Image 1 (tube, rainbow, N blue to C red):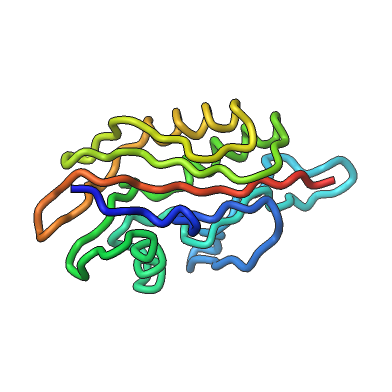
Image 2: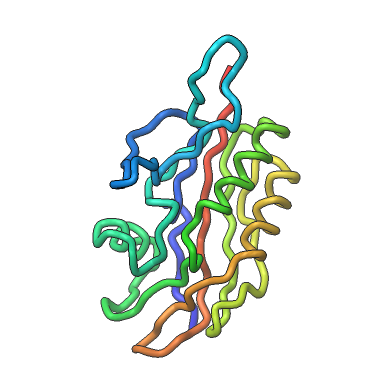
Length: 172
């Protein structure tokens, strides 16, 4: 059973600009990715990607606010149901997307959904909007390589889409 996803909102908001982030008890920033090597003339690594949700947490480790934010993208989802979600969080997807962005330097929105089976296997992707065909290809492959916590419908695993939406910006 599929629930309608709201494409005007993002399950994951990706921006290549500085945004508020949270830092875990270990000092690791869970909502951003920094460049691998700092720019010439500095020792500071810039943030190259940020997310509105913790990247390193499984669905069950997300805060109640993060779960509510994610669930808000599914219209009419009963309170006891859960959407699918990458088993180990979204960091691997974000890392692949940030590497692609460093090469392509796209500008615009990416909206893509992966169909997740009742066993948590990705089956196919649907691309709704993309700033660049190479970015869409990387996103599709990244989403298809993930393992997912299956959606739960009335207490049973079910098939549902996981929505990924990202905003790419050129930074001069």
